[in-house]
Length: 323
Image 1: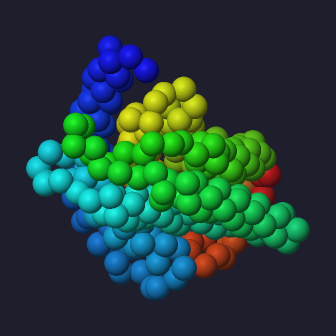
Image 2 (image 1 turned 180 degrees about the vertical axis):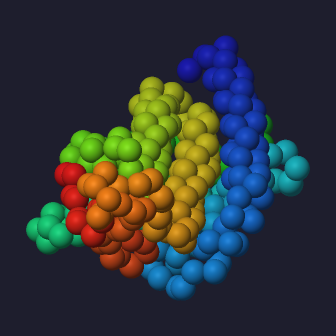
């Protein structure tokens, strides 16, 4: 490589690092600011609920994400002194496994949400759980293989001022595929249930829980698809110096979406779900004239984290299931 090519590569690396610093700052700001905005709601809902597996997953995501992103931002910043090669290696492993564990916890919440929709189909529930375990077992295996490669090639670059690597791992690029496939699977099954429950969602007496469940789930899927495609493009086409461009943003956005979806569901589950409305005078003649009440009840599908409630309507004691 000529001296001019080396200089061009160094300038490109410096630009990538500078952009990565800015985007990491955006990521930590997003994660912390969103936590501040939603803390009062989080305290009134999550903190007051009983301890369950989903609640533990929620707190793990909350506890791991801000310090993890902050550590990555600090490593990319120019506010610290030089690092040793061993510190760079330790930092890389801590960052990768912190982010991976947070994403696993987030998709575990997605899995529980999907299980709530298909709870009455035991075979589907087992398939969903098996798909989740297989997806992240494959991702973890690819991650371990990639980190073995990076462990021997990590170094501190005084010219750029950050940790880097001399070689790239092919398996590291593949870690996005299994989670993306699982999220598409979750989206497809959620969309299918939304189609089947269309009458409940769009009816006059709709079920708010299902509306929020489907709305938030579909919206978060499309947002994460965009973020994942961006990261896949970076890892497939860009140099090693650009690998930190999108990972912190993906981590922060995933945390914001997951925690907000879960808090919305818990908040709605804590609201009174029975409604009584005066419907005016009866029309069956003087002998039956009186006030007609509209009562909304709910069929509940109990899970460890929330209840999926579907409405059934009773007029004058006669139950009418419109779906």
